[in-house]
Image 1 (cartoon, rainbow, N blue to C red):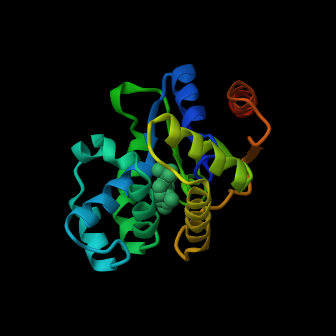
Image 2 (image 1 turned 30 degrees about the vertical axis):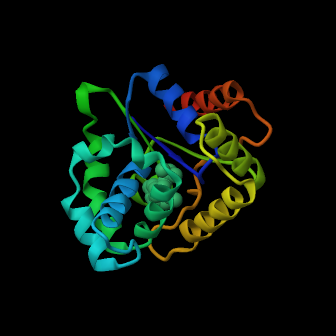
Image 3 (image 1 turned 60 degrees about the horizontal axis):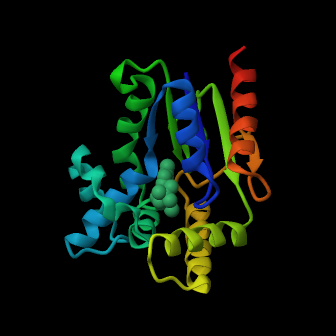
Length: 211
Ligand code: DC
């Protein structure tokens, strides 16, 4: 079974997928990490993430061990990820790995959970259960701002808001596999929901798909 979870940054995909992973015992792939790793590889090599040839070469050279880097969680990596994600050659280079993970989950798991922007529409259109998790931009920016503060980072709310807005626009406006809700995805607006409410609603939907 494949569970596809898409949506913008700060909507709660990470918390939801961690709970689903525990509930079902499936293997999980955070596909944003792949794009973040490509973005950071380009930056570290002194290149620009919008340089298509450089970004594509970085995607082809990506090694699994590079996904463990804590720096990948930074906002700089998030912006670079969004930029390399707009390069079609980068998306193509990462596609087989994602599809292979989905259909042959590691560790003998009986299913997989992939989260990103285009899982239900482009990577795994055949997924049995698709969810699109969102929340208003100001709510998502507040969550991100508080998270940065709690980790001891200095942050300015207006900057977090503008960066998130720019990333949303780039991710949903690109020509190749833009962020979008699949027609058959379950839409969850988490703006006024607690994590446990989100998990309960998602589980109810997924279980309705497996009966
Ligand atoms: O989910 P995240 O914040 O870690 O993703 C970082 C960026 O990577 C996101 O802004 C766009 C890109 N991305 C993508 O284009 N396609 C995906 N499936 C996942 C992420």
